[in-house]
Structure formats: C-alpha cells, structure tokens
Image (cartoon, rainbow, N blue to C red; front, top):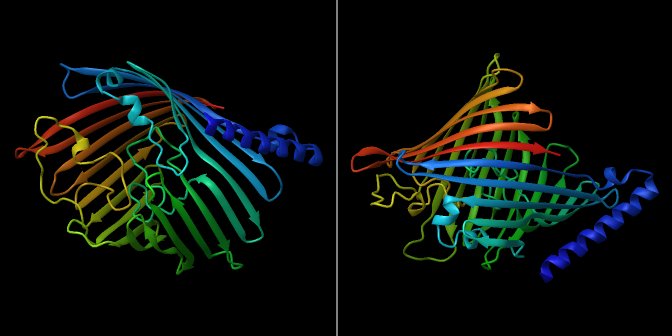
Length: 397
C-alpha cells in the first residue's frame, strides 16, 4: 500500500500544479487535466466440442489522466481495472496470482479480490513525465516505446512486444524506461535512445536513427536486448499504391551457452485499400530459432506448452520458423464493419483464424463479436485445439 500512497501523492502534486497553470492561463481545469477512458463488458465462451463449454465474464475499465503542468511538461497516468469471473477462474488454480505479475522495475499491480471464482485486478501501465523543449523530447517513467513498423509481428519492438491476438488490450503494454528523442531540423530525421530495467534485473538499452530515403522512412536500431546484442533495420513506404513495410533484427547472445544461438527475425508486410474500402494486409515472418516440424502436445492440448500465443518477446514472435499472416476488413455500412484475420505456421502446421464483426451503436458506444479458433497438426492430421467467442460492449468517455 505504501507504493500506492506514493503514486497518489505524485498524482496530486501534478494535478495541483496543472490547476495552478489553469488559473494563470485562464484555461478550464478539464483542458489542463483531461480525463478519458472506457468501460467494457465482455462475455467469453470457450470450447473444443459442445460437450464441455466454459463461460467467463470480464468487466474492463480504463482511466487515462493527463496533466499539462506547463507548456513543456506533461504528466500521464493510465489505470487499468479488471473484474474477471466464471469457469476459467474457478478451474485454474492460482488464476489471480498469475495476473499479479508486473515485469516493470516498480510493481504497480494489485490483486484486490482473489476469491473462487472472482478476481479483481488493478494495474498502472502508464505513469510518466514528458518534457519537450525545442527539438528535444524526454520521457521518464512507465510508457509505451513503439519501434515496430508492421501490424502482426515486430522484431524491432525491443521494449514493448505485444500480442496481436490479445485484441482487448488496445493500448498495449508499457515499460519502465527513460527515453530521449531528438528531432533534426530537416523534419525528416531523428535520434531516439531508451533504457529500461525490469523486475528480474534485466535491462534493455538501444538507440534508433530514423531518416527518409527514396520515399521510405527507414530506421536503424542497435543496442542490448536483455541478454543479447541486437541490431536491426525497419522501413515503411510503398510500391505504387501498395504499402510496403518491414523490419528485421539480428540477436547475438552476450553469454555463450549450449542452448544459446544467434537469432535472426524478419517480417515483411504489404497492405492495400481498394476503391470500395476493402482493406487487405498480408505479412510473412521468418524466425531462425523457430520450429519447422509438427510437435505432439499429448493429452493436454495446451497451447501454453509451446508458447504459441502467450508471452512473446522480440526473439520469439511465433513458434514456427516461417509463418504468414492475412487480414481483411470491409465496412458494410457506415456503422457496421466485418473483418477476418488468420495466421499459419509452416512446418508445424499451426493455424489461427479470427472472424470479427463490429457495430457503432452511437458515438461513444460500440459492440463487437470476435471468434478465435486454433488448429495444429497432431498425429499426422489437423486437429482443433480450441474455440473462443467473445461478445464485447464498450462505452468510451
């Protein structure tokens, strides 16, 4: 609780400073300290076959607070609250304890209620100060450092690897870091340096140089990634009317061990929007440390055994050596949108399929229905590992 009191004190100081600024500049308090967020309710149905169905519910609240302390200084806070209850919470031992794991340098995760089958979890995934002066920008604290270029897989994203399948976490994870950005006078180039340290004592520090060449935004990155030296390149541009993005990173272990090896991870993606608003995005991923043959999960059928869609790193974005990704979306009306996403891992014959349909109920409210199915080759044939259907209602404020 001591950490929580300190956080509240820091927020109060920032708010008071912003309030004083509002009096001096004649701006309203809402302009100086804007607050927004959302409240979501999501019903989940999981099953392999209809003989055994699991039903869970997630109430998800987010509060974002900014305090414009001065023209140069801004404080930001992002608070995430989740109430989870249902069959999964009841059937998995220590479900709440598994959620209460903060990888940051400062533990800002709290399990407020942990009763079978009900869990209340709160975490702060943004807490930082941002200072801007001329061409220099400095951010200290928990923040998102997004160096990725592609949609599905980001080997350049050394600080905030995210899981594309976790669609309910739009903001994506943050990291406890110090970041400095310097924008060159030409407006086309910049230097970016960041350093972080996690709860396990591992650190990542890297620099990025971004520039424009032949119509492409190009970035070069280099640094230390946990226990590896990392160097990479990323780009974003177009081939005619087709968007062309990609990124690649080479990892060299700093400590020689039998199980450690150099790893090369690269992805390229193409996207195109048709005149009728149909959008297509296709990508290919190569990971030198991935699997190229089917594996047998035994009787468990648990995807966690291969880490297929669990906690990802920039070195392990997908379990197979080679994989492809495809997504298509189409607005069937101004209010309704349908989409389909899929991943396929070659060699392993691992597949993920996700159809989606969403509707805007009003300006601040939307509903979405998401399906997810997982398949993998087992005993020389493709088998269904699991299905999930998610119905979510979201109100934004």
